[in-house]
Length: 130
Image (cartoon, rainbow, N blue to C red; front, side, top):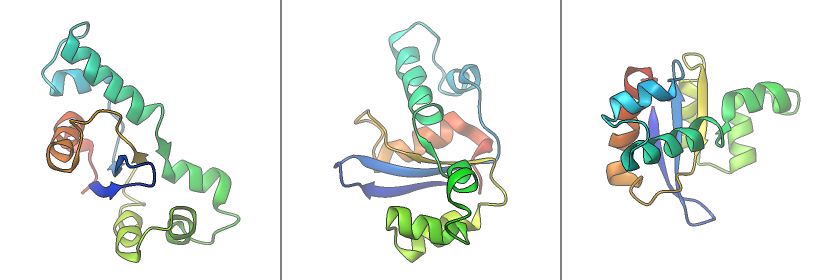
């Protein structure tokens, strides 16, 4: 699942990305059809880094730190992020089928609602939870 949330309080685009399995950087580069060390390769590597190393992984955050405070993942999402029930329902629905669920704020302007979602889905491939 790649769910576009709109702009957050920092005026940045925001997504929730749910994955059955994480993807290696080399696979992400191959799926983006770019080579490491090129300008495009560096962009995809930075995208990969910001998603997998710098984004908040919601599932592990809940399990490690908030499961004692919030009885359900849905409650955690609603209270920590103040997301609407329709958003929390969508994210909660993929909880059991996902290895990881990321809250992702891209730093590149090309990763927006229109192009960003298709780019993310192409780079992550079949690992995106449906």
